Image 1 (cartoon, rainbow, N blue to C red):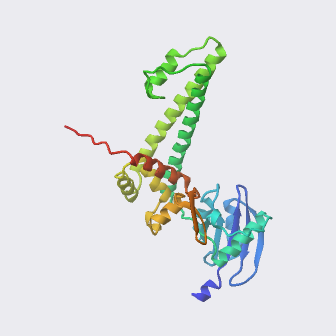
Image 2 (tube, rainbow, N blue to C red):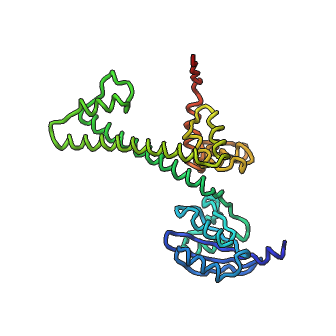
Length: 313
């Protein structure tokens, strides 16, 4: 085993949209050197691996980022072991004020050989597809909030307040009141109102389409994923969309040793600054998965209310 490890060459890849800066750390305490920059294209990556030698003697790593897992799948298909590294857990020297792509690649290769890097969990294609779909719905919900806020602010500026009989904002009756009872004499204001109303209705239809697509994706998911999503809905405050979010973001619950590790991954653990006899715990760290944290916080707010039992006669 030791002789095998002595032949492993470690690649550090600083990945960008169009380029990849490559550095290599030779086995044992060998040289760590820069290979150069290559285009971020599949054929360039294939030529690089062919140039460096047998794939089974290579280990590659790169930071998780906006380029996703495309490079991971390409290297894995070529037979190269690859890890996607958590950027926030890469060791950094306080006095190091110089940052370049070349230095980043060299640092990745050196730390990877030393075992100082923490890899991320890479989801499979099914989990990644469901996750992207759910995140698209989250983006649509944020757009809906912005569209509603713009319309509400516009109406408030011009003294148009909904009647007291309309208790719920943005309900069907509320939208009917806006379209039937709110009008302006100036054509410019009327055009502005129509545009804001159209945007609110457009986002609502967009969310409905995404909800239907999520339900279809869940129905077509592997049996194990469907069972997890169904089981999560037994918890109060978690419905189908929330359960699918948890399943797609966590992927495998068994990869966490316990609740502390799971909450640390979501960023829901308290920050702490303790020294000597003094101990101070502050607000939550918010350094984990923001999508997972949002669902858990919403479920916690819903959990504070008593369950509503429906009796069917």
